[in-house]
Length: 462
Image (cartoon, rainbow, N blue to C red; front, top):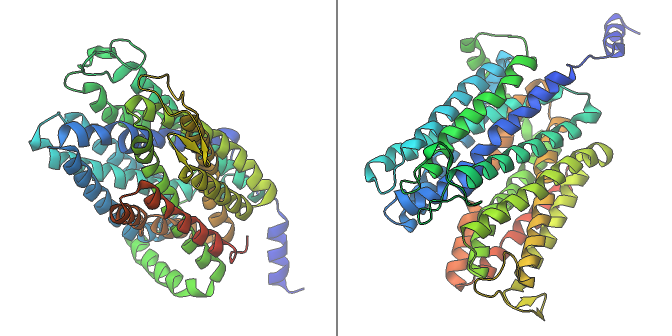
């Protein structure tokens, strides 16, 4: 045995130490801190408020919000691999999270000034939204890159799943807080549970909807602190200036070597395709339900809470299955469940379930009282159960197959594949729907995304 081999063997024989449970818990709370941005701002509260009350009309509002989303998404897609490479070269993660977290806080807090019917705030509001979106997405890239140093490889799936589940719980609680105690119906002045909004928030000027911006910023600042205080960072290796040059050089090498890493390349391509399908499914699921059953805000909001609860349990259990069965199997199983759910949704209308005639919803009826509505709700829960593990296991699989010394860089590429074609799913759904005048035909396009992603996944070695 040569001296170098003996030295390598000696280093490998020394058991590696990992941070304390408190450090791991601090990292997990990042998902809790960041999730309300997606729940409150981009999905259930502020985005619909902007389209309905700030913009001149809902169609214009939807298009303006979509353009801002596309612009920020393009920048995120292009810059994520570069920033990941720089972070790997510098060795530090927390300074980047702090900078981009500040962008999230500032951008989201400015949304308070989005007064209804004020055309002068539209452009500043969209800029604030783009800033906040860029901040939360980039901060997530660097937070993900901390994972391999927190727990042993055999526990990485549990860590990812627990983080994702914790994030969903944070999103659920923030949504319940807003709907139950802050946002009121302008006609009645009461919240969803029938009480006057806290802090004297004015229902007529939609202060309950607008407060979601500052609330999101404050929530992030409070709950991200444990990560900064308890979770260890990498030691600094290079100055920022030197890291930029070194990071760009490493990124060029990575992109040049990626075709030789066929398994990793296949996974990144598969992730791009099935993530498009999942994002589109979440984005259009509520719209499809509105068109099919005529659901309003209360039904859609309740549907969102139930779906998020299902996703929480799915991510938590999926993380343990990840460690027991492997990330690839969890991803494949999740995609199969999503295909079953989509197929079921396409076979449901107000008076039919799987070709069986049922009693349609009655005007003024109880919440989710009709059989078809309950079936849709059940399939929505299946989507939530599968969606959480799909996302959690995807980042775990990347950690397991990517070079350890370039993990932030590959998380940048991971973010790139999750964003660069994110417009394709909605575009295809919109196009097919317009051509056929059928929401079912538009939603059926999603089957292709999951089948294609599953086919590419078979080429990945876990």
